[in-house]
Picture 1 (cartoon, rainbow, N blue to C red):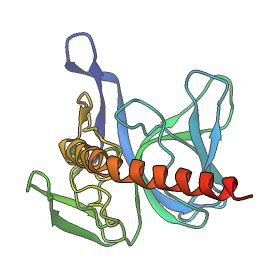
Picture 2: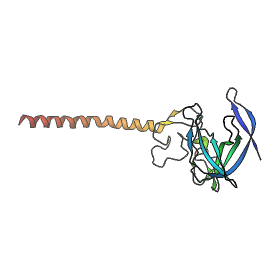
Picture 3: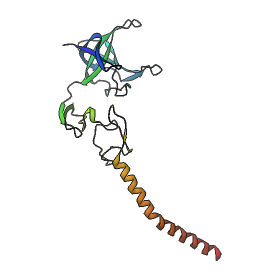
Picture 4: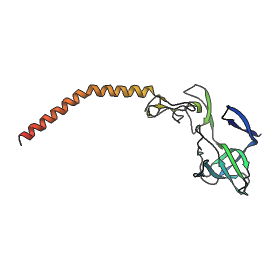
Length: 211
């Protein structure tokens, strides 16, 4: 079964067919590591080679996977991984060899599990190895895990800023209250520190007077 590649018209928010290119799925084994190409251009991309089942020739794969800020995302794949990629074949006029443009991928034989998002409580699917706590729409500051180091239960990393996908950042109330409490405690301790400092200065002066 094939799918059609949909792109978003950023002017009016509507979707349209992008050249009606069919999306297909192919399976194989990566024969190289993932490498970044085109760093000096406006559209860098990640690149690798895959050997399809039953073939002896490696097929070049261009990964066009982007994050919410439209930055290229490096696939979490390594050499010798069995993978299923979704995309379409490309025939560039500048290259006589066929290549494949991939928009998504999935490791073969990787167990998928259903989980309940701790943020919105909706269910989502992820790989067992990832075992995310949040769905993609509820990730906080780019992370889909509940913080394990207890830095901050609200923003997660203790940065004082909360960044949800496709939303402007906002201040973390928990970090703000914590900082205010630390500041108030410091002000309460200030007279004590000033008194101790004065005693140290007086002691030093007495010692110097006896020399």
